[in-house]
Length: 270
Image (cartoon, rainbow, N blue to C red; front, top):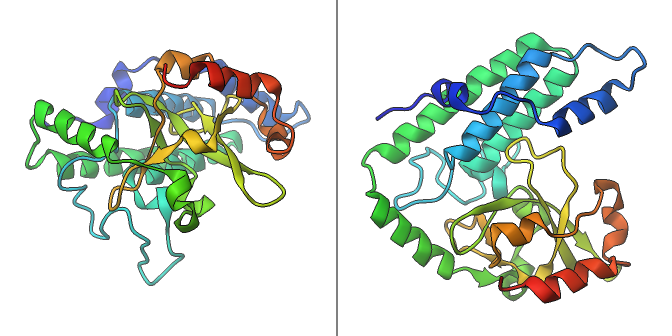
């Protein structure tokens, strides 16, 4: 059955997250900045929650039916080549949601509403592609379990991975629960990756401190669906993990807080 994103949004939680309000206040700065398009900002937050609830854009047998393929570097010949998360439905939706947020906090109501309409159209095309032919829930669960079990440690293939390929990728555990998205990679002075920083802000990808996770504990799903990072911990473990402000990430790889490493030593495998 076709499900319009507008119907999902109507059923989603209507309250705007406190983090959105806080960031909005910071953007305005109390100094006569542009009036925020509050209604559109609220609609974006509702859509964010609805897309997460619908498990939008997760890989499944047969791909996504997109014209440009899946999980590859693509180009239309008329613009920049897209790589990594931007070649996946989740990555594209996240970029669109963030563009809507930028227009909302700058008071551009018309453009923000146009982006919301685009979100609905893209969502519906995606749903049409994956629902025909439909995959039985039990078959989909079995396929995804096998697919995630085939994930390989990032340390084994890091020479073929770029930061652009990783940013925005979905992070999930072996129970196929959504743990967040890769927001940033922290490198030491020798250029070695030390931590992946996970955001739990959903498709808007903002509003929360970041969760540093040791780089060597991450695995990535195989091609052509190289769009998901697998971290074998529970939702509770990630929810209780130490966080760092996003303005401290540059120093993280050189002087990680002791509590970060201690926490993961105690909880990996939970």
